[in-house]
Length: 286
Ligand code: ADP
Image 1 (cartoon, rainbow, N blue to C red):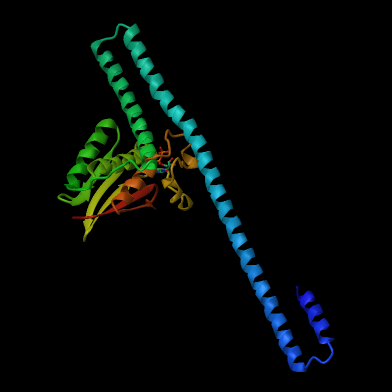
Image 2: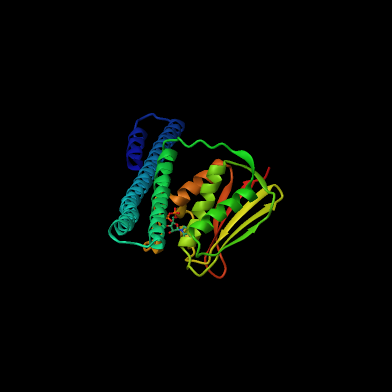
């Protein structure tokens, strides 16, 4: 381009009777045109590069989601198979053998536990699908969340009688929450803390009031969550590599994050000292 303008300029300079002033003006015009074309070209190139980068980013995100969906399908099939197989075994045992009343009771309560697991799994999958379709309405009401939390923990203790859940719950804290969603947040966070920590280590649940904020902590002494995973774990279907040996769908924290955001709250994960994780949920007190 510079070469071309120089040629045109040279041609015009050789025009006889062209004054120095006219030559100078012509030169300036050509230079301005040159910079204008170069400028437009650069902007076009820059926009094109930004466009390519965005398409690449979207493509990468889409392929990551696809890969996670595949893993999800694999693990969810597994998750469904094991309670169904266990249910079948309990029923077969009840049918075939002459069991004592005590043994029958045990087989039946094992079967009931498995149906609960299936129910929870289905609930998570259904809820994630309803969230994607924008069909999950939230009805926050002013409730005593200290009480709601204690009730939730009691249920979890009944479901996990051999685990230690330490409660440090300040009484009489009120917040405007949807009770069903609040219970789902507590359940998912405490269940995770129990799954991803050794059976002999306690899980601590704390509820505190700080000025106009209500803070819920779920602390465990388990695997912990490395810094670079702390945002990813809230994505749909995301599971850390270290949790391959554990049952799961990668949906629990996606639901927790959704419900906390719907209440204008915040959710973060921190390191527990000496090991494990702390999930912190901050809500408005009313
Ligand atoms: P999952 O059904 O796999 O537990 P979640 O959405 O509840 O799905 O959690 C996503 C991932 O985050 C888990 O697979 C696990 O890798 C990690 N994670 C969640 N909670 C904990 C925890 N308390 N300690 C360590 N890792 C955790």
